[in-house]
Every structure is written in C-alpha cells, then in structure tokens.
Length: 608
Image 1 (cartoon, one colour):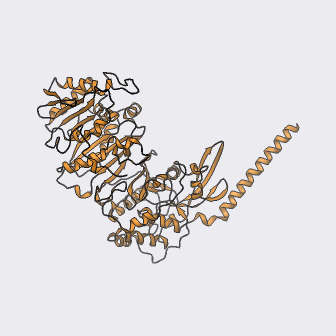
Image 2 (cartoon, one colour):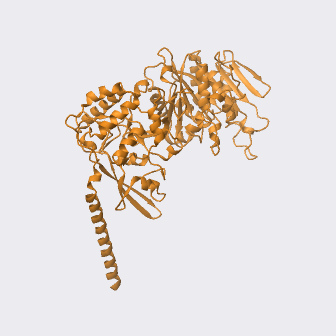
Image 3 (cartoon, one colour):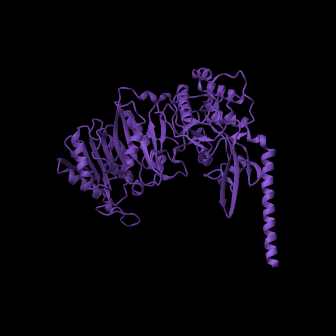
C-alpha cells in the first residue's frame, strides 16, 4: 500500500507539472501575442490599387522593381491574410528526447494589395531577406516548407507555365497570380480567408548548401497533391534570378521550443536542436548575405546556372519531378538561341548508376572534390556540341533516379511511367518542333530499354538512340524488332553503341561482369541481330578500337579492345564519347575532336 500511495503521489506530481507546463505555454502565447502578428502598419486608405501597381512596375529594372515592392509591403500595402501568422508544430526525437517547436508562418506568399485583388510578388532572396529582417522574420527551410504543406487546409495543385524568356517578367507574374486566384475561387476560398494555403508556388528557402554556393538562390517545393515536390532543393540559379513560380513565405524569428521562447536562428545553429527545423542539420548562417544585395545592384540579362559568367555559357535551368523518385534538370541555352525556324534537339540523358546530376554535368576539380565530377563532363561536351550544331537548338535533360540507379528504379516502379516522364519534358517546349535523342551512360541505358518496352513503336520524333557503355539490358526478343522498324522508318534515324571488352577487365584482380551480361557481350549480340538486316564494314584501328558501320553511317558500333584488362567504363565517355555519339552519321563526325582522343571540350568545363 505505501508503494501504491507513492506511485499515486508521483502521478499527481507529474500531472501538476504537466498542468504548469500548459499554463506556462498559454502565458507565453498570451504575453507574446503580438509576436504572432506581423509588425506592419495598417494598410492606408489611399494605397495604390493592385492593377495600377502591376502597370507601374512592368517597365522598371529588376532593382527598381524590387525596391518598389519592398517599400509597398513595409508600408503595409498587404492583405489581411498576411498579417496574422499561423502556428505550426514540428517535432524531432533524438537520444531518447523529443523536442517540440511551434513556429509562426504567413498563411500565403508575400504580395501587394487588398484582400480582393491580392498580387503575389516573386522576389529575389536579397529583397526577401530585407523584408524578413525588417519584420523580425526569416525564410523557411525545406523541412518547414514540407510541414507547411502538410498542415495546409487548402492544397492547390501546381499550375506551371511553359518556360520561356518571359517567365521572369511582370506580365507572366500577373498571369500566374490570376491562375491562383481562379483556383482559390473554384476551391471555395474567399479572398480574405485566414486558412493556411500551399502548393501554388516554389519557396525561396534558406539552406546549408548556400555556404558552398554564395551568390545563389535556394528554391524548393511546389508540391503536387500527392505531397511530392516538383522542385527539389536547388541552388543552380544566381541570386538575381526570379521567375513567376517563386514565392516568399515568412517565418517569424521568435518561436517556442519546449515551452520556452527562442529564435529560429539559434535553433538552426544548435547541433543538438537543428534537426527540429532542418532536414539538413545545422545551418549556421540562416540568411542571405551582402553578396546577394551586391548582385541585385548589377542585374544581368542572362541568368546562368551555378554562378557561371554569362559571357561564357548563359545557360538556363528548369527542374521537374515528373514521376515518383525522379528529378529532371533541363539545361537550355539562352533565350536568343530559340529561333522559331530552328528545331529543338532535345537530348534525354539518363544518369549512370551512383552519380548525381551535378557530377554528370562535371566541373574542374578543387582539393577535396569527389572524383565523380571529372569522369563524364556532359555539360562541357554539350557546350562543344552547341558550337558545332548550329541548325538546332540543343537542350539537354538530365534524368536522375532518386535511388541513383535506373535499373533499381525500374524494378520498383516498372516501365509504365517512363513515357509520362518523356511527355512531361517535351511539354516544356510546346511551341517548338522537337527532335529527341535517347541516351545515357552505365545504368542509364536501362531507362531507354524501359521506354522501348513501354511503347508499341518508337515514335517518329526520336531521331537518335545512343548507348554509352550502357546496353546491358538489350534482349533480342524485346528490342530487336522495334529498333529495326525505327531505323528503317527514316534515313534521319541513327543508332550509336559505345562499349569496351568489360568481361575481361579486372577489379581488385577479379572480373566483375559476365561475358554475356557486360556491354561487350550485349553489343555483339545486338550487332549480330542487326547484321540480319544491314551490311556492316568492320575494321580495327591502331589503338584497338573496332568499328562496325553501315554504308550510310546511320548505325555504328565502336567497341574498344582491352588487352590490358583495364576498367574503361567512364573513359569512353570522358574521351569525347558523348560528342561522338551525338555526331555519328553526320558531316560533323570527327570534326575538331577524336573519339578516344584527348578532351576536345576543355575550354567549356565550368569552374565550379
């Protein structure tokens, strides 16, 4: 009985402590009530109307436009839905302890105007940070964005606008804003609704990655209704890039942690607490810095990715998530290259096993860099091609499976989604004639074979199929008839196969692929199948490169002998292999480069 009394007393003490915690939390919310509302002036009765404001900023420079927007917001020209903040709870358990945070977020993205004609205004991170600083706020992390979407009472399906040169202009901002307004009306939400809304924009976020990419903007989000974000966390745009899809959601710096007040910045910088608010761990600098403001003072017309000088490359990046566990990064040249009379050569490059898109693009190595950045250089080889092929606008789409293996992705998801992935990429260029290339390195060839499995006939817009040591999955019964019909359908259609004698290559003194299962065996099987329909001229050059080529050069097999039993898997790609695979059977074949020769693309390798 004494034991029972003790236990009962202990439970009573626990209950009293819990009540005290609840009272303390209630008091905190009461005492700091104003902290749940943006500290912003009331909207003036003579504030500029939204339509007039949109017309006013259309002709301004980027810097002038951003200054004007910031001034209006800080003067209080915002709708009521942005003033009262929405409480959001996040939890994280570690080492036997669960931490609980309450943060306060804006219910919608920043914008100008009244409740009826609210205009969401995309902003650079420099201006967004300035506004956040003035209002005692920060920008969200990726984890916060996911939590906001999960908690949102209204989840709007994303409504992308096909990318073009106008996507960074105010008229397109206004068009997309009107699409959102129409969605909300259809959803039954009144303009002054106080519910939390998400799904209609990408977020400009803070990220640990920004430490490695100063002068960049981090974007993330635009969730589909299934909860999958279209835009993975991405830092490939300069900080002066802002397009219609970007939204600015503020998070109040002051937050509640386990019943006590603290700040978002302190929690993000704390190794023991950061996982509560960040799925990247510690973020020591949780704001955009002065370099971004300097960039805004000198805006550029072209917005290259990864901090490249526009005079060198001037590339534009679009990122899609067209299927579960799939990210597609589309690299296009500058807008002026998209002449209406030039077809777009859309190269679909499926990534090799174990490589990221950044590693596949490649860069000059710095001390401590991963060696994978220096083994393919598809980015530099694409730039070489853009200087050679002048009658086509070359766009390359890097197709990355989240699990870094297309064979593994296909085992999990099958082949039925692959045509939808390709369709989603093609839809980014609705007004252009498209010519498709299906290619990839290593396990990337599995994506091509998955596509062949899923279609009755290879579509007429596919003009080239190239296997860069990647035809492991070739099977006569599944693929020979479709390839043959496609090759015979048009003289424009071309097939290129690169491989090496991998079945005798040694790794730690042992072979690692079978004679039949490696690309050497699969290439010979494919070649023998095709010999039933075509005649090939075969020869071997002085460096042991076997070539098997049809009279028109539309089908080429280049098979590297390997008497030294080396691993040449990536060497074939690095030594101008991608360039050659894109030019076989054309007048540009072997012009200004040699397959298996020295790198012909060195000047186009990006520095970072």
